[in-house]
Length: 313
Image 1 (tube, one colour):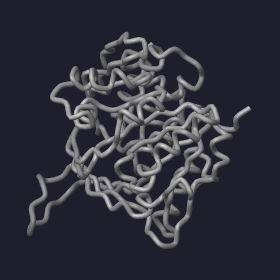
Image 2: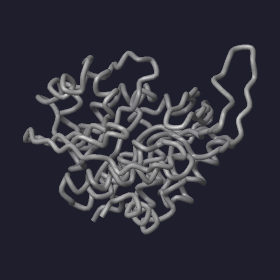
Image 3: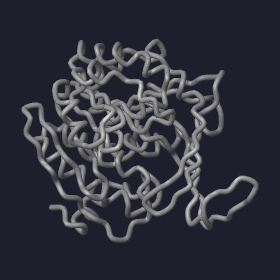
Image 4: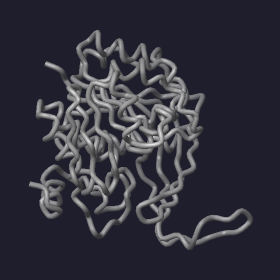
């Protein structure tokens, strides 16, 4: 028996979220905002916290500094019932931080990568590869060390019979230096959004991007925001699923990560991919009912009650 359903492998930082901002920032000028939240950030951490809230047994492996932000990250993960035994503490680098300027369903982020950029496979406790059913990797372009070691990480997972999901997230450098022709065959679930798919494959449309990954991908879900999601199965069949729309969006921070949490929480239980997709659409929508990436995920029952109110059944 594996101790964990999922190990989240990736970046860690705090988020300083500013809401209700009086316009866009301008150099040499100052703007007011009406709300501020300092909270656990990073896409992988939002995924981990929300998957744990849904009843999934989750552990986290990531690098943090020995500082107050690192303490906040670790305490926040523990408070969300995420096991922190595989965290890597680093004296040389500070814990990362993202300042998020939130504008309704869109946002502008500035991130200091800090420790997250330096974690390598050599830093990771190899025990985790024997101790989990599944590994979820996110924000690979935020983590130079992990990206350079990604093939070895994926091969080690396969050697131990561990399934893997990957959500590349956005590349801040916009160079998209990841060879998907080599990586995707080792990934069980590829979970980009439509813009990321097109950028990664150098495509001008979703259709072109899908055609480019088709020879290499096992299963994929393309997240299309308020247009829902598109499931692409290894056999070539697809399922376009409309969203469960929340008409009173607080913010959309972490909505894609919450989709991942819902989808993978069902995947590790052995549910079929269509059921996983439906649950992911629901959890992504529920995410938008509260501020921040984890605010709406207090418990599985609460999330599902909110989902029913949005039309999920």
